[in-house]
Amino acid sequence: MLTAQTDGEKLLGNLLGKTPILEDLHILCDQMGGRVTGTEPNEQSVEWGLKQFEEAGIKAWKEPFEMPRKWAEKSAQASITGASNWHPKIACRAFSTGTPEGGLKADLVFGGMGMEADFEKIREEVEGNFVLIETIVMSNLTELFLEYINAIEIESNAKKYGAAGVVYMSSREKKLLYRHLTSYGIENDMPMIVMARDDATRCKRLLERGKKLTLNLDLDLVDEGAYNSYNVVAEIPGGTLKDEIVLIGAHLDSWGLGTGANDNGCNVTMMIDIARQIKALGLQPKRSIRFVLWNGEEQGMLGSWAYTQQHKEELDQIKMKITVDIGSGKIDGFFVNGRKELGPILKRWLAPIDSLGPFMNIPDPIIGTDNYDFLAQGVPNLVGKHDVYNYCSDYHSESDTYDKVNVQNLKENTAVTGWLTWQIANDVDFQPTRHTREDVNKIIEKFKLERGMRALRLWDTWIDGSRGVK
Ligand SMILES: [Zn+2]
Image 1 (cartoon, rainbow, N blue to C red):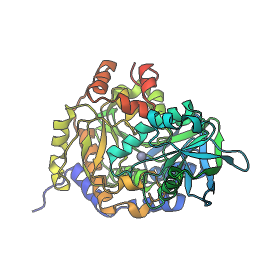
Image 2: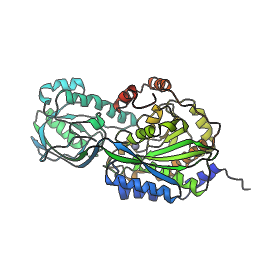
Image 3: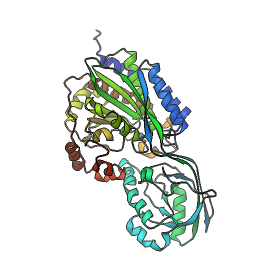
Image 4: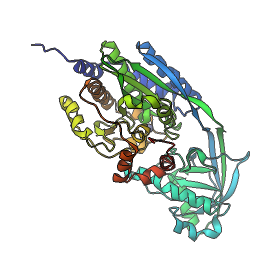
């Protein structure tokens, strides 16, 4: 006997079935490639994203916002001379400064892990020279986060002791390079690079034996002033509750070493796929569903910050903001970002699709992706929680390419996220309250977010009230 399918079940079935999601991923990653905000591939991806929504018959538009500094690496080369002579493999940290024509030459000194005590030991040698910072091999999200946290002390020491630049040992093995923001973010004003672990440990062994090494850095960059970038926004208007919004999004931009596949092309294609299937089925949600492909995320979540400023008057209407940004490991729950009360409600929404789970929701807040400004504005927000899969090893690196995306997981994650979005958009009883500044402060204290917020340069703007609910 056939039983009538609910709209949510129809959507789930379509998303698990044949859709163009992998063709989208191929175009976004293989064809356009790495999408650094401000570069041509990024601009192409904006136009492409817009076109995907429009071709599906969904109203879509671009929303401009100002990016404060245009930065991209054109080429980064290094040579070591002295006791040994070779060309180590390097990449710039994001917002590294460039070097003069012909390069910048200085001695390389070994600065241990870069803590105050390490710098004290080399206090006489560090001024005017490059300092090599040792790292451990990163193997999980906690260690990845520690890299960001340690960078604050390392880089402020480098400045204080007058180093000419910072040379980080890559925390990945086998010559793999990656790109992170410096702890000074867009305000960084010194050369900072990552050197292949194989090369950096060779330097360390030589330096520890008292051998003298000189490093010549030749960093050719795009480094210009402010410009406009765009978020891509699309909307399926609601019915009876059309003024209420469920906002779901993923960031379109990436760092340019790889092709931004797990971070975050796969989840961009997820957003497009969900919108397309809702439209193809002719479904009418009660609340409006708004899809946003964020830009400027890697450079400080600047697109989503701008959105919360430009849509300030509308924030009360956003009943939920969902962010998907942790690759293509299996979604096995959601971060409820400090709102414990969402746990049981999520459990109820997800119960009918438990065969795609099981799902475990986590109270802890995520602050390093596009949910942050919504959390800081007191808007209820979720971040997809994934099985770690290969997210860490390829994160921000040359190896983040299409072949690393787990396509089966991506299909199921899209179905889970689509299902959840549909439940939220139609659950009239779900009427969450927007948090006040005091509520958000309680979350910051309870989950001890200050250190992480400092590492991501979010602390000062929260304290002075320029970013987040007043
Ligand atoms: Zn990301």
